[in-house]
Amino acid sequence: MYRDKTKVIRIGDRVIGGGNPILIQSMANTKTEDVKATVAQIQALEDAGCDIIRVAVPTMEAAIALEEIKKQIHIPLVADIHFDYRLAIAAMEHGADKIRINPGNIGSIERVKAVVDVAKERNIPIRVGVNSGSLEKELVEKYHGVTSEGIVESALDKVRIIEEMGYDNLVISIKSSDVLMAVKAHELIATKTDYPLHVGITESGTILSGNIKSSVGLGIILHAGIGDTIRVSLTGDPVEEVKSAKLILRTLGLRKGGIEVVSCPTCGRTQIDLIGLANKVEAMVQKYDLDIKVAVMGCVVNGPGEAKEADIGIAGGKGVGMLIKKGEVVKTLPEDQLLPTLEDELKNWGR
Image (cartoon, rainbow, N blue to C red; front, top):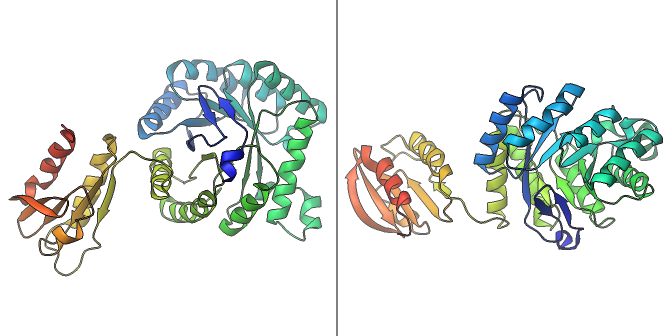
C-alpha cells in the first residue's frame, strides 16, 4: 500500500508515515489568543481521541500564545499560517510542533527561505497545503479549470521550492470540497511522491452533509492505501470531527478499539423510544475503550436474532426489555433498567 512506503515524519511525540497508524487531526475554532478557551477545547478533543491539533495563527499575539497553550495540552500542536512569514517563524519559536503553510501565499522566495531555515534549525515539519479554491491562475488556464491534475502540480511545485532549499521534513495536503476531484487528486499524487499525506475533504459542510461527503471521500482514499493523517472537516463542534474520524477508521478496519453501536432502523413493531435509546447508548459508550459491538434493538421478537453478531445488546418491548449476549437472552428487565444495566455490563466487561 502507498502509506507503507511514505517517509516517516515526527510531529512532537507522534510519528506518521511508513505504515505507522493513521492519526486523527482536528482544528480548534477558538481564538488562539484566548489561551483558556483554546486549552479547554483541545483538552476536550484529547478526551475524544484527537491525536494532533491545529490552531489558527493570524496574529503575533496568537503565535506567542502557543507557548502557554503547549504547557497545558498533551498532543502535538500545529500552527496554521497564511500570508505572513513572520508569524510562521514566531509560531515555531513559541513551541509549534509543525507548521502549515502554502508557500504560494507567504510571499517572496526569500520569505519562504526564512521560514524554512528556522524549521530546519529546529527540525520542525512543514505541512505544504494546497486547496482547490486557491489554485494559481496559470494552472487553472493550463488545465482549463480547477482540476485534480492542477492541484497536484501546484502542491508538488511548492514542495520542490522547499526541497531546493535543502529541506524535506514535509507533509503534503491537497484538498477540495469536490469529493471526486479530491479522490482523483490523491490517487494521482500518491504515485508521484513518498511524502506523508494529510487527507480531508475541505469545506465539506454541516454535521450531516460534511459527514456524508467526508465518509465517502475518505473511505475511497483510505481504502486505496492512501493517507497518513486525516481530518473530517465539519461546520460544528470539533469533537464531532474526531468522533466521525474514529468511526471511519474503525469501519475500514484501520483502527481498533472503541465500541461500535449497531441499531435497527425501527418499524411498526417498535414500542419503545428506540431512537432516543440508541442515541443515549451511543453517547454513553464513548468513554469506554472496549473493542466490542453493542446492539440496540427495538423489538423483543426479532431483537435477539438480529443482535447475534454483537457482543452484547439490549432489546425493548412494551414496558419490558431484554439483555442479550451473542444472540442469547440472559436477562429480562423493566424498560427503564435497560440503559443502566447495559452500562453496568460495560463497566465490568472482561472481569
